[in-house]
Image (tube, rainbow, N blue to C red; front, side):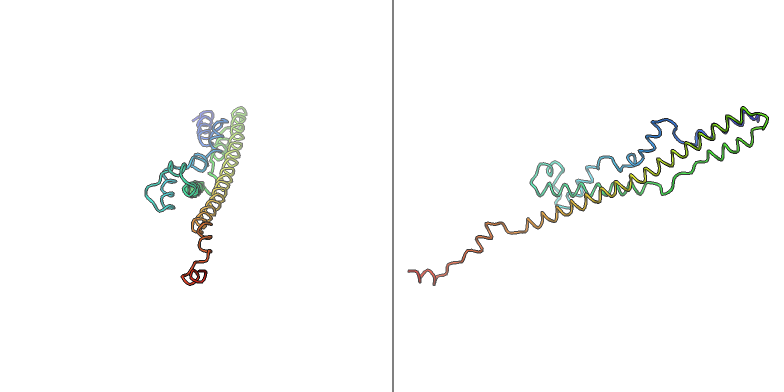
Length: 201
């Protein structure tokens, strides 16, 4: 195989292994957290199932909760927060721990070694492609680190909202169980006995 053919082969292999080169492609790479589900809309079916567990009832739907009494709305907030936390944590677990390795540099280094020293033009092209591959790997690693940071942030925000929703639900349950003012006033009013009625007469 000629040196030029070897270069073309290795250049094609390297090009296919360095990931997206366009701005749109890099935007997609940087948006992996969204594609994994971290920022997508919460599944309404999951939210509805959690809502029924919270209310311990098989009937409520999201529509009932949205336009229902305050108890239903507080329960809906908690159900949505639970579903959101589950979704973001699942997406975070799908994010790789380490950045994917790129073999383009090895491929292009072999390419440089295979190109004869008396063909400076080809060596120049190979060097240019290698530099592009290195830049592409740096961009890929940057996007990967950004994805990890975003995944952690989404989980943190979801957990914070879940804590607030749970506190609001507990507060509402306490209010529900507290006696209303009318009942308290009635219980504080002294009961009349038969003897007290007779004594006034």
